[in-house]
Length: 300
Ligand code: AHM
Ligand code: MG
Image 1: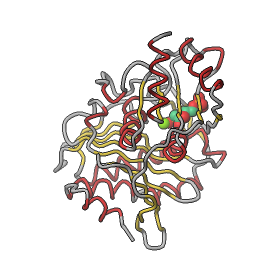
Image 2: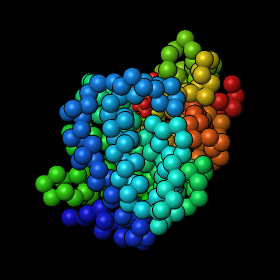
Image 3: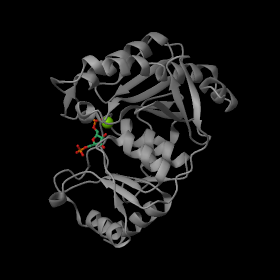
């Protein structure tokens, strides 16, 4: 039986990084419990102007408190916080980015949602995704599953509530090519290049799968291949999803599993962020399909 801590040690991770990954991932029991009493929406908007679910703010407040008290993180940026938070008393220099509860519009439907985290070794949270030291997400499905990369491939672990340990579920993911896709947005607003991409999928017999939860859809493509996209549109050329909190941690993980992430023109992991809530169009998934999408973009 392989435990999360043993796995991280075998990768040569420093004790403080292991402590941080374990600390945050161990909060999933508390977050999972909180769903029962937090099914509604708040009357507040987040920094992207989206209505916050009660679980968004619950998970955000909980993780900020736990991470702040740990003394492990110097700087924290959250999808649910306007400003970057600095913990002056921290004994470590890690900078952490998080989407405390991704897919929150699905809470009332009981479909899979999760938490997304990226960790930089030091410095600011405003760094390209390629500089991440580690990234992970959790997904609340029938099991609570943790998918993690410390730059040495991608593994998944399942939370055992009885022993309170994460146990290795799957060793070394490798994104298969696959032939399924999910796209966010509204057809009448899509740009010509995206329409051509969809035409390519139709012509090549791709199957549609889109849940409305980025973590769940990315987890699916990690297993089955294919791609997820939330493109730019005529109304929102920058797309919907955030570079820091969603694109970079998932892009890092999928890249570590042999896949790719692009905005259609460039590797998203190379983008230098200018502000915490910066958005980006996203195509993430199997390498061959992303290569094809970039070709379509370069000729449209
Ligand atoms: P969230 O972080 O507030 O949940 O928003 C991001 C979510 C993604 O998980 C998902 O892929 C997308 O937004 C769904 O958007 P839409 O409802 O427009 O399809
Ligand atoms: Mg999100």
